[in-house]
Structure formats: C-alpha cells, structure tokens
Amino acid sequence: MSAGDLSDTAALRHAFGAFATGVTVITTVDADGCRWGLTANSFSSISLDPPLVMWSQARDAPSHSAFLGARHFAVHILAEPQLELSRRFATRGTDKFAGLAPSSGLGGVPLLDGCLAVIECTTEAIHPGGDHAVFIGRVARFMRSPGRPLVFSDGRYAVAQPHPATA
Image (cartoon, rainbow, N blue to C red; front, side):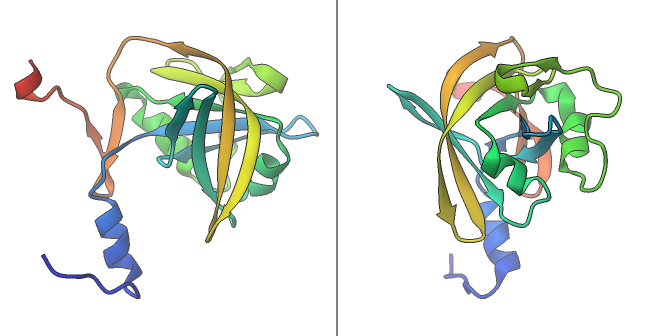
C-alpha cells in the first residue's frame, strides 16, 4: 500500500468508496410546503441516549436551503429492491415525488413506503464540514421492516449477504 496524493480527489473518492455503506433517502418539507429529498450514504447513528443520528449534505445541493431551514427530516433506509428509488432521489432537476404517494410524518415530512427502516427526526444541530453541512437529528420515532439493505460500495450498488463465519 502506498500513500495517496491528497490533491488527487478522484483517488481520494476511490479510497472513501472502499467503505461500504447503506443507502438512504432523506426527506423534508420547507416552510411553503414543498417536499424535498435526496439520496445519501453519509448516514450514521451517533447515540442511543439521547437517540441521535447524523448525515451530511453538499452545500451546493439544490435542496440545501430547505434542509437548513427544516425543523424535521426523515431518514429512509432503503431495502435491496429499492435501487430505482435511490436513483430517482439522486437525480437533480426532477420532481422526485412524481407518481409517489408518501404519507405525512412529523411536521409534514414525506414518508416513503417499502423502506427497511424510517427514522423521523427533529433537527438538533447543523455543523460546517468543509464543502458539506453535517446535520444532527434527534430521533422522535422510527419503524423497522424485515428485509435486506441496499448497499453502496466502490461506486456501485451492491447487496449485503451474511458472512459465512456467522451462519
């Protein structure tokens, strides 16, 4: 293994991609009632007491101002069959909710169906993080369904399989 060149952002992104993550869609609603959402793999739990989670968003994302002003957001942990939902919310410039019938969560936040888990949060804090903002949410309620998660690794979607040593 050799040290990478920090000025080579493609190589750094490739190194970051070695860490497999789950895939989430984060949703909110702005003060005008407009629904916003994006695909994110930067989600993580922080604490059980109090129950806190975090995720990050690029500051140049079209929905950034909506999330900055939001009192609530929902984290949707996607299930293995939800690849197209992930792609839909990763695409800029489209009506991401077209043809969907989300239910309404805390503060009117849109909740998507068929997810492995949905975690509804109140915005606890927002911190600067370079070209991103780091959102901390306090979990207000959650649900969990059976299934396997959609995974992202090495720049592509993947599926999680149980390790043979834990069978």
